[in-house]
Image (cartoon, rainbow over all chains, first blue to last red; front, side, top):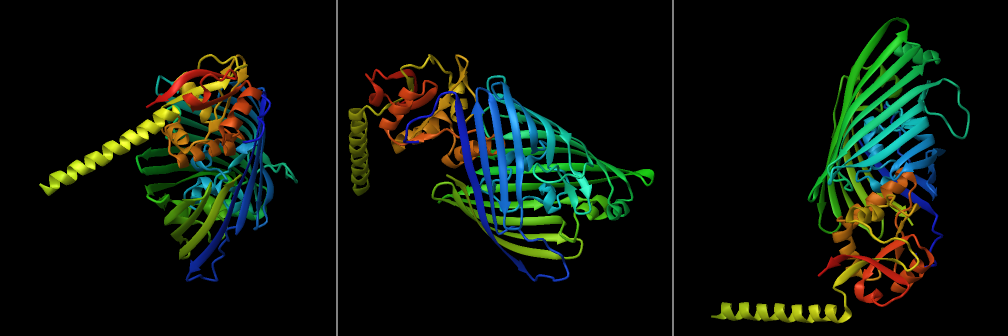
Amino acid sequence: MDSAGKPADFSNALEFFVSAEALSRFKPDASIARDEDPALQGDAIFGRTDRGFHVFADFRMTTSGTHAVERLQVGYELAPDTLVWLGRFQQPASAWNDASDHGQYLQTSITRPYIERWEDDEGLIPQHIAGALVESRRALGPTHGVEFSLGLGAGAALSSTGLQPIQIVGQNDGTHRLAAGARLAFLPQYLGADRIALLWAHDEFEIHDAAMQLGLQATRAGLDVAGAQVDVSLRAWHFLGAAYFLQVRYSGFGAAVTERFNAGYWQVERSLPHALTAFGRIEPSSNTQRSRWVQAIGGDDDWAYRRDSIGMRWDFARRQALTVEVSRSDTSLARLRELRLQWSAALP
Amino acid sequence: MERRAAVRYAWLIRATLTAVLGGAAFAQGHDTVVLVVGAKSDVTALSSVEVRKLFMGLTVMSGGRALHALRNDSDPRLDQIFLQNIVSMSDVTYERQVLGLALRQGREPPPTVHSEKALLRVLAYDPAAVSFAWSADVAGNADVKVIRVLWHE
């Protein structure tokens, strides 16, 4: 900022997160309906802070057809670092959203873990809530800190194409039900990047689509998520992981039925000379192959019950990175191998 | 015998370099980094935690007003001291932290000034702005208030 300064009582933020990706599949099987990653994607982030009031918007565009207001929030800072928001926001019980959200540049790997996928990408857990969100970060003694987030409102509806969060622009079918999510994080250093967190979410659904009713054998469902997150750095090493325990209760078609399955991921990163970062990630799960929820929401044969990835990222210039990632995914029908190359940046 | 001579030469080279570089730093007064605000600012004190919070993009209030951090990279060595001693993070980690806050809450990452002239201009204009500078660069400047020493060689 070499020009004249800004007025004292407000500040504006305008950031663009953009990425371009190329994907190659080894031994592609034409019989498997495999989703394509968007070749180009971008998020425009606008924020304004004025005398404790915050306005925040996130507009997303991709070459696979997404043009959406992902988040629109209006908030007030009750005390320093304690905010109350109203609007559509990301549910706080996601470890990946907390770390990198939509910003491809902010995540070391190219791919999001399967269990953290967005609703429009056949994600299993609703990632957006329209309602109220409280976020707070407090010191805990002279060194440590604690971070707390609680969101409550209308969650995703369940349609023939999967989970559908409330749209800010466009039509909603009126079947959105209660959703809640929370994260409680211990920060080993109050102002550091490390955190160890407990995650919790609850979502309720009414199922009106006949095919979905048949697939799930229910007209109502309740999803409970409990999880834990670890995000710590040790010298040149960075460990990032989350484990989610999911329980779905089905009712409306005879006796109520409950199913449980687990999914998670563990990612290790190592900083190397010349601004390089090597990374590897495993994404194990259990009971997902027998889950009605995974079969119905995961959609086609795309959902992998296990994926292993390795890759390398090179940070160059200012806020730009090139990343290469190789992965092996086990789906219900086949083992898939993929190679991705990505350029990502945060602008300006 | 030859090894002893080589060791003596290495020591002499090190001593000469230290004297030259140290002398240059001393001549320029670039051995102390101070926290600065504009002369009209009502900020009188900030703790180490508050300074770090401020430059991490979090809210720090003073006199009922939110303060604005201003990163000063007019000198590469000053920016290095900022990363190592004020926010205690690598450049990449710091960028990710402040960009992450922008992405999660729409908070503006601390803007950067690239020259001493620009720094003085912003401090004079914005009484909520807080930055850092070499002590020698702001000594005797009536438009700038020094709040505290952040780093000393």
